[in-house]
Picture (tube, helix red, strand yellow):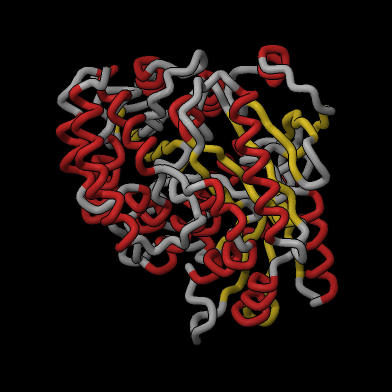
Length: 467
C-alpha cells in the first residue's frame, strides 16, 4: 500500500522530471549526485563563481514538495524519496548503447570553458575524484579532470540485497556500453552496495566508466589551457577493493568504503566469478589511466606532480595543510564537510580551512577523532551526509557533535538533529547556510595557494619526520 508521502512525491515528481530535463546543464549520461560529477562541478563553481552546488542534483522547484514530504514521519519520508527515485532516477537500459565516452570527457572540460578563449592555468589536476581533491584544486585555482564517470540505468524494482538480480541487468547495460565504444579503452565497474545505497540499488544499476587512456578532449584542454611551464597534478589514489571479473572490461564491486570490511560483502553475497583486488570503483584511480597521464606528461615535457595515497582521507588532510600554508587562512576555525555535501568555493571565499569526510560512517568518525587529538578551535562548523540508509556503520549524529564539542564551539550546517539521517531538506539548508557564510565572512579576495608553495608543501610532507 502506498503511503501518503509516496503518493505526494509521485504526483509532484512528474512535474519535476520535466523541469529537470528542460533546465539541466548536464548531458544525459552524467549522474549529477555522483562523487566524480560533484568534484568537477564544485571545482568549476569555485573557479567561475557560477553554480548551484549540491542543488544541481535536484530539480528546480523541488524544495517545495520536499518541504511537504518533510512533514511526514521518517519511514514515510524514506518511502517518498524511494518513490521519487523509482520515477526519476536513471535511464532506460536500452539507452546504454548510446553512451559515448568521448562525450563524457568533453562534458568535463566544458565546465571550464573549453574551446573558447580563456584563462590559462599554472596547473591542472587530473585523476581520482574526492572531496579533498576538490578543495585542493579550488585553493590552487585550477581545473580538475576526473578519471571516473557514473551512469545509471533503471531496472525493475528489486530487494536491495538481491545482488544476483542486480548483476543481471547491470552487466547487460555495461556490455551495451562496451559495444558502443569499440575504439576506446576503458573499464566499467558495476557497483552495488546493499548496505550504504539501499534506496539506489532498488531501482537503478550504477555503473562507473573509467578510461584507461587520456581522452582526446583532455589532451586538447591541457594543450590549450595549461600555461607554459605549468604542471599536471596526478591524483593516483591506490585505495583497493575486491572485485569479481565478469569479462575483459567489466567487473562487479559489492560494497564500498565505510566501516564494514570487504570480507563481509564477499561472504554474504558470493558470486561465481574470479575475485581480483583492484583499484576501488569510486575512489581509486585505474593504473592504466595513471600510466597514460605519466606517458603524456613525458611526451609533452610537462612537469608532473604525483599524489599517490592509499585512502581518500589522506587527500583531505593534505588540503587542510594547504589551507594552513596560505596567508589569510582562518586557522582558528574549521569547516567539516562530507561526501558530496561540500562547497569549496565557500572555503576559498572565507579562508576557513576544510576537512572533508568521505562518508558518514564510524570509520570516518574515528579518523577525525585522531585528527582532532590535541587540537582546539575557536569555531567548528560541521555537516554530514543524510544518506537515508541508516547502514550498520552509520555514526549517530550525537556522536559527531559530542566529539566536536570537546574541541571548540560547534555550529551545524544544514542539519536538523531530529531528522537525521532521513532529512529531505538538508541539501537546501546546506546551500543556504554556505551562501550566508560567504556573504558574512568574505575575504577581500578568494584565498589562493601558488603552485610553487604547493610543491614545497608536498615535498615537506614526503620528507622523513624527526622522531
